Length: 266
Image 1 (cartoon, rainbow, N blue to C red):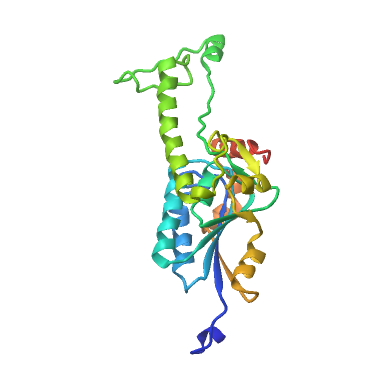
Image 2 (image 1 turned 60 degrees about the horizontal axis):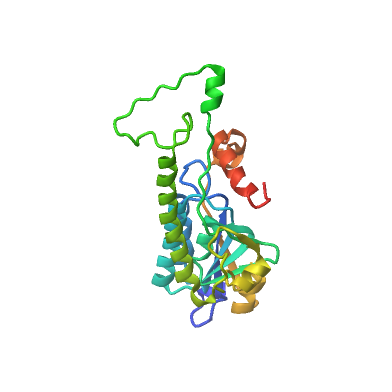
């Protein structure tokens, strides 16, 4: 009640934003700017938080959604003059690390996985299987590159070159984001931007994180034992909460599982 009494100082509040899951534009799940925007806006605008803490557990996903979410966090942090701390749980890799870099400080557990600053594209080739079962592929396009990387035809060298050009541009943007946010805290290790990833303790040595710490004790250490916490996250419909796990889109589920599996967390 004392926060409503004039001239009595209120206990500090830390707004906690949960960023848990793969990053994707799908409206049926995952982390996206559209899904997270209301929670992020409330976290920064409701009351006067002493800080915002990002609780991150993500193997990555869409580079565009990663960029949009991180940009929203940075814009509100600067607008409201509220510091941001990222706390890595199991993993903040690839796009998950992109989100972590939206914070002013990054903290991790000894066994957390951080890094994977790279770009990956994966798929399958089915043309030989189709030949074996006697299926003929019929595709008609206007534009010679319209069917680029078609999984039902043999891979073309020029398609791979085009893909690598796209990946290089995205990788450059990722590296620039990390370098601008981490600055001279980065160690300069030659493997930082190769897509490699490390445990929390090694990430601290490399400058990818600032220390080993957990959310509640660290925030209380910084803002006092009476610090209160307000938790924000995307709202889910009743169907999403009680039925979505059973009826989850099969393709998206496999994609997300593959992302987690890269870090031994499937």
